[in-house]
Length: 550
Ligand code: NAP
Image (cartoon, rainbow, N blue to C red; front, side, top):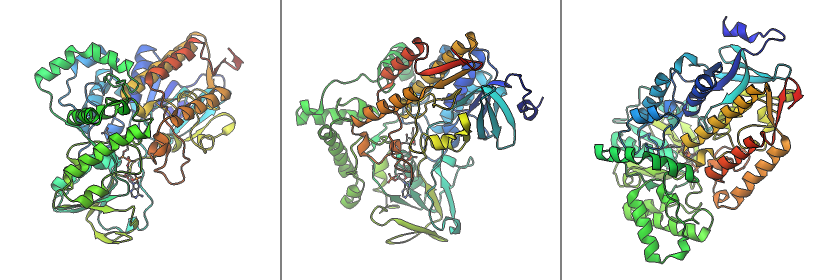
């Protein structure tokens, strides 16, 4: 039976599938494995790309690599998988992470239940059947008891609506939709818009190849050196020997990183001591700079200023032209309140003769022209323009799908004033829809595979609970959702995060409601709350069996 026929459900018959999963990245792959191979459910994954890998399938821009270290940016659910896979370097490049995810798909025989090149267009909850009717852009229709969003937090590319873009005679690319065959920058005049994590990774690599690179910066960012290196056999053996302890530290840390939390204030040490701590962390490189220095960086502006000033000092030391150094030094937001970029030779790139920094805060981009682009201060002739302009984060990918819950309410309407969820897992009015790393969960503030595994396992336990009790419907209660949203906001308001115009608050998308989207309580506290909810018969959720409440 074709899926198109399967969708035309006979009255009284059950849905075609137990679950439809949208997306075959880190989340979707594990969700499929867990539901199908552990719970024995009938599942189909729809994936818009021509291959698996999600973020790591799409983001093939030059210099793309993970900002988390390889040995903990990976799954932990399979001991065998962990034992057989060997990472080559501290921060894996995109092709290596993609190979890892392809290996996972093959190793667990996942591909037979993944339909590639298929974008889900809409999903409507069938109130009588307690199931979702899902339709794809290819016109397929299928029903499933559960709809699982595994669409990722940073997947909807943000291409700003620049006037005249169609007139530009050169080539332009968004980093998150990069051509598989790559882009040859040799002998080209390249423009790059955007200096977030992506632009900061891409610029040094593009500059090394292009005839000239012009970087259009609206807001400077604080970047920390990655200090990437290949693993020696000895280093890898050391990591393997320490793996149990690494896992323990990950589960005990708020961010899901294997760093030991520090319990000292930046204000309780002398200037020399503080400087020595920052210097050491700068030498070590990576995210530890944020988590491993002081406990008040993200809650106390005075403490934060010490970090910010240290980094600005490093920029001044590195960048030879003082005016360029000044332009690269952030003063508009506290360090860490935007996702901190991790780089390889970013600031050094500005010492190259073939790199120019243009301040488009002072003189914004007015329009694209056939020959390049024009800012308020002049025209720049360019052959290639790279959009490192980020994503409609956390909600963009889900809201591209026409999702309709009880009474035909659309998710877009429900979230018009910002996303509302219970635990980032469910939305009141949208029964049997689960959102892996949805807004309102720690998600992007945590080492992603850790956040993903916790969500997948919680959702699967919940579905198993329902199955063994013959329950067909689960829905977050409105009051539980309201309380959770208040809690998420309250925790955010205790920090400095609200001081930044970041994608965490949707500030990068014109017209997007300003709401702090991820949960800042940390994954330890969050996991505890989710487990408590489950142990109290899924408190805050309403569970029903065929129309009657549990
Ligand atoms: P981003 O952090 O949102 O940065 C986008 C950049 O484009 C910003 O500099 C922004 O300026 C600029 N921009 C946007 N619209 C513009 C416009 N109309 N005119 C001029 N400039 C404009 O996006 P991203 O760098 O792609 O990073 C997004 C997230 O992806 C990161 O924070 C990180 O979580 C993740 N990421 C991870 C890795 C990794 O693991 N290695 C790598 C890349 C990305 P404003 O700041 O002024 O808005």
